[in-house]
Length: 497
Image (tube, rainbow, N blue to C red; front, side):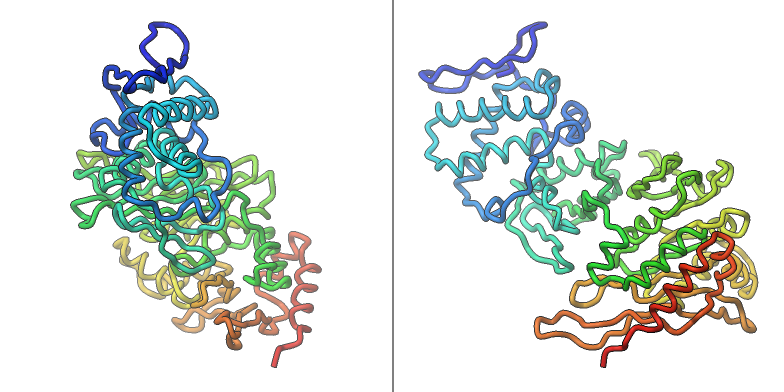
């Protein structure tokens, strides 16, 4: 295969058919194969980074992830060992993605012929695909990453892999050879963004090249083997129009959300885990003007804004000595010095909420963020709690006045029990009565029942508010007529019995 040839380019040296075994060569310095030592994982991932070698192009058919026999895995291990003894990864790394796959396929076919493995054509094709994924990609995860209908991939050790499709979690037959192979793949993923996961640093947040969110927790914290969770993002980003087609919001509600994004309202998107907060935030940012300077702050950079003037910031965990950590609060403080017009915080989960509120209230109108909460009222309470977590000794009324002066709109997203995702509230923060923050709902989602298939039937409806609190802001941006038309159309909808 890629034998030692001095300064020659990558060429293939195929073993002759009459040879009894595949010719061996000196061991490769770094081999991205299940079972190579953790200390060499960074070298191997740097040698042939998955981001530069494309995975399988087409999404797999269901039969490509069918359960395989023990004999299949035994054969695969033998073929892989022979391949590693034959191939020179330093030469392979110089090839483009397609050429590298072709070279691997050619030598694997020769190995199968020489060793006389009894395999059907479909089994051989599957073996070729699996080995290419092991060397160049993310191993058994590749068929799942290629599918665009999967929202989450959850790997609980080498033998259990679950996925979420259409809001429902289901088991798969994907498995890894052992926990070491799974840990090596985890190391390969996190090393691409300059992070590490091992026994000394067993928890890590990272991202894939497409922005998909990755969390890894390794032994000894994960008792049954490494736990890998991937929150996948669709290749084609969702828009508000698509959310309307999916029933997540009504057309009139979508028009109001467009206006909210356009007229620089300060927005907090609230919702539980997996409710679609980041997706909705991506949708709203599409209506930001192209001439605005945007600074994003995230734990793992996953927002994909289309505007030309965007600065993306990402937190950094501490190093092995426990130093060098850059927190979300550090990023929010720093971005105030970067002349932003809008600040977007991917997820607010701590004292940085105070800095974000201060930014919203000091000339950075149109800033946005997401927060974990189950209702708009709970969202307000959580912001108060997170400010208290920062050690601020402010009276509760002062904290609430800061919130009222900063936040204009709370958009509540929810994942219903049938797996569907809905925008359940568009709520304005109006002011204070005494020590209580007052709000008013513009749109809410009513659950009316469920059909025979268990799908929830509901309806988005206007609460009849004809003049929202951000009306003057809409008039300033020339959107008052469109806002009035959307509110009138929503008020005229016929309520289902």
